[in-house]
Length: 290
Image 1 (tube, rainbow, N blue to C red):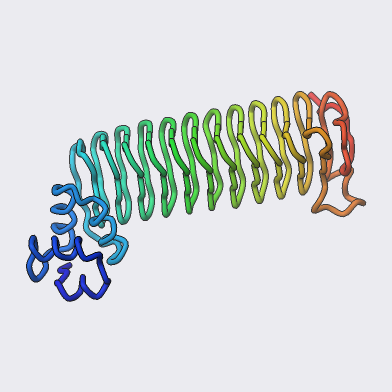
Image 2 (cartoon, helix red, strand yellow):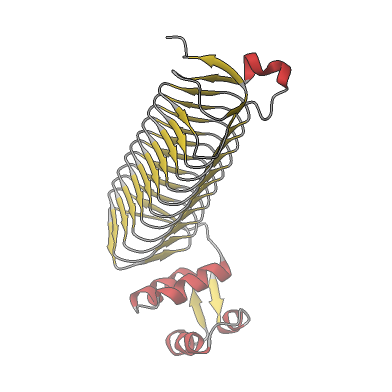
């Protein structure tokens, strides 16, 4: 794909960036070569802008490993080993690393992101498709996934977490802001969220579920330990906890919000060793059967 001078100018670039473009490339050049040259010259922001304007390509690049200051690639990257980048990682389509991945800045992948080892993004993490990590995921900023999310180990997020599909976390989930999941959320260990936690379907944790504000699920909520929130607890169907169910002071516990009252005994059961304080709806069933 060739980008001409007039083609780029039609996108109304900044004056400084366009002057540099003309000095370096004259009448234009190959799209990916332009991106590579910009990154090599330290103009990573310009390279990201160019990718935003002209979009991804079908080019596939296969390499053994990547160690770089930054990456801006319009197509698909297949890496046989690991990826270690000090700054931004921006990929137009798929990024697949058979080792680990570290990005010292933002990590933005237009389609699927698959890392067979551990993943660390020291900025924001945005994935336009599915995100799969064989080990854990550690994101210092906001994490947004427009597909399914699956990790083998922990998921730690220093900002908000927004998932458009189902999320399956092998061990613990920890987020320092709010978590929103458009489908179901499951974790093998604890789920700890500093603000509100909302899933359109169910929430299941092998350990405890703790939310710093409200806790809400369109279906049921189940935890091997505590189900707790500093705000209200709302479930469209049932609530089941191996330990206690605790809402915040002055807030209620609601089950069966999407179930007719006649069906509460079967579809809106509330199970825990002790009846929750502030239980406003649902069928109190007592401790879950062993």
